[in-house]
Each structure stands twice: as C-alpha cells, then as structure tokens.
Length: 249
Image (cartoon, rainbow, N blue to C red; front, side, top):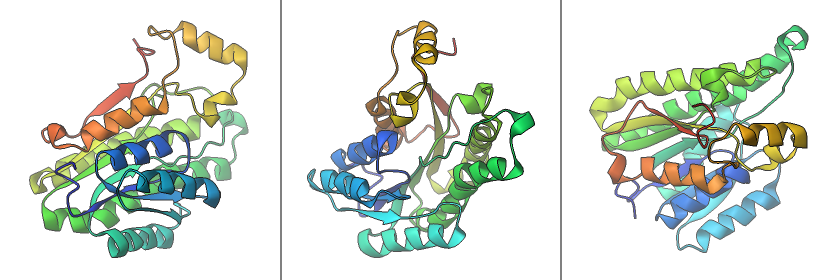
C-alpha cells in the first residue's frame, strides 16, 4: 500500500470509464480504498468499483454533479464516513461542449468551466481538512495539453484546463508546508470514447505529429497518477506532466 494512502482513501472523479476507470483501478492495485464518481451511468460505475474490490480494497461509486457545491461536499462526506480520511484526490471528470468562440454561447462556456474548474476547486477545498490535519496528502489534477497550448474550437475546455494548472501551482504553494503535494497531468491524445468519436482523418493526422507514432492508453495516465500518489513523489509538487507521446515537441 502506498504510504500516503494508509488509513485513508482516494477519490477519483469521473471514474466510471476511460482514463478515470484506469486511474481508479491503478490506485486500487496500489492498495488504496477508492471512491469514484459518475454522472449518469450507474451500471458502468459499479462495474469499475467491483473491479477495484476484486483487487482487495474497499470501493464504491457515488453519483455527483460536480458543478454543485452540495454534491461535492456530500461526496467527500460519504467517502470519509465509509472509508476514512481522504488521502488522495484525483480531479479527472471533464465535460466538453466544443464550438468556435464566435458561435459559443455563454452557457456553453460556463457549463464547461463549472465542471472542469469550479468542481475541482470545491473538491480541493473540501478534502484539505483531512490532509492538513494529517499533514500529508496528494492532489492530482487531470488537465490537458489544450490547457497549455490551446485548441481551436475548445476555448471553454482550454480555459478550464489552463485554469486547473493555475489552481494546481497556487495550491501547491499554499499547502506545501503541510506535507501536501499538488500536481497536474496534461494528457494528449489518449484512446477513450472521446477520441474514438473523432473523424478518422483528424486521428490519422494527429498520429503523424506524435513522435511515438500512436495514441496513448488510459493506463499511461493512470501510471503517472500512481507515481504522483506514491511516496516516491514526495518531493514533487506544483508540476505539470505532459503525457502526449511527444506531440508538443
């Protein structure tokens, strides 16, 4: 079991599929009790929770609308009540509502900001009570290369993911003296339901720009989360790790 998770648990938002599911299962494999959130697919979320339990840890799923402060607070309370203090928070859940700025409504913009940035802020704030008291903890925010370099048609998503990097670095400065690390991961093209829906022409064009010549796997992101949640990463904070196969070189 990871030394930072002993006698506590990990929360993984958006843990019912794709990257989030891989993260939940990786943390379970590393010995963490896991709470994962889902928005609508309870059956899928329970399948992931069961997979985590099969690895010998406690795990359950919670439905949560991460733009709701009440849902965020209830999630943390449920995790604490059933599994103990929160030792790891992975803000992975995300929403996309793509469109060019000229055609993007305020609601399209704000709905993505609410889930992808405001939600992580509220959860960070809620879990810090446990982490500050214990003088240890890991917060890992899943950003995106779009948050570093921008992406046409995703002003809302890129703004939220960029804001998540700012939140990561600021929080790292605020809580480092309490033994809490805060880092971000910025994935590139990872094989998920989201990338599967992209036009083949776009995908083949993207692969040509990736030095490793392929899209990444959810397990690639999960492995980085496992490292950042482990004692081996105790002296790493405020960093943004790109997992993009060299796409941005």
